[in-house]
Length: 295
Image 1: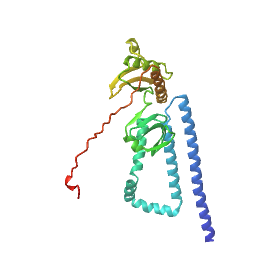
Image 2: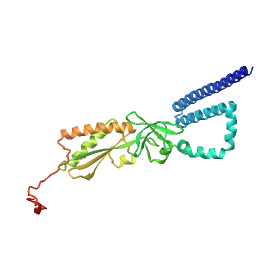
Image 3: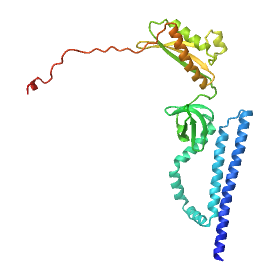
Image 4: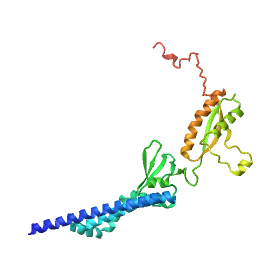
């Protein structure tokens, strides 16, 4: 009779734990589905930032599974007694947990502040100085996922994100001004060089006109070209071309490098390369130890 009672209570306990896990998974999947559906609808119809919804999904998942773990522990009589014992020493336990998980809590708090202050959002192109650059794919409770230009995922702790200097290419205005730099020979006609660079930049389909109405009235060109410096064997010339967003700016830059180089070749404008003159001394050096000869 005792064995039958033990098996019955054990089976009931296992069934209760399985039900808690199953219900938790169903609630979590359902919540993820509805939040994701609402997020996609809001992003498409209302043009709403989806970063907060993504972060909310991670928070909801963490809360659901924490409640599930608590219910499972509370369902097991032995664990319930242990929980009471641990509660009596809660001060020491809290100190141990706090010391062991201070990095995790720091990441969570940093993630919350990032969602509130919004220095960047999901989909933004950012650059962490000295670390990486790419597109923000996800912001979780602990880390931020960045997809770089090699299609690799860089996982950066939120505490690191909140302490680094971040360059956001999409904050307020996505327009990017790109520097198109060339070095030409000192014998080159600088006016011709600047004219070629301006013409090719302005003709490029990805180059946009970022001038204000006042700039146009004042006669400023669509693309400014300036002589910015003098090198050992070259004149340094820079064109300031604008594109709608970073991807277009990169594409425009790489294409203009080829186009302008070909135009320079056609017009006889040379791009110098460093030259060095090395001289050797043929004189015989005097022996520093003449007394040692013949020994």
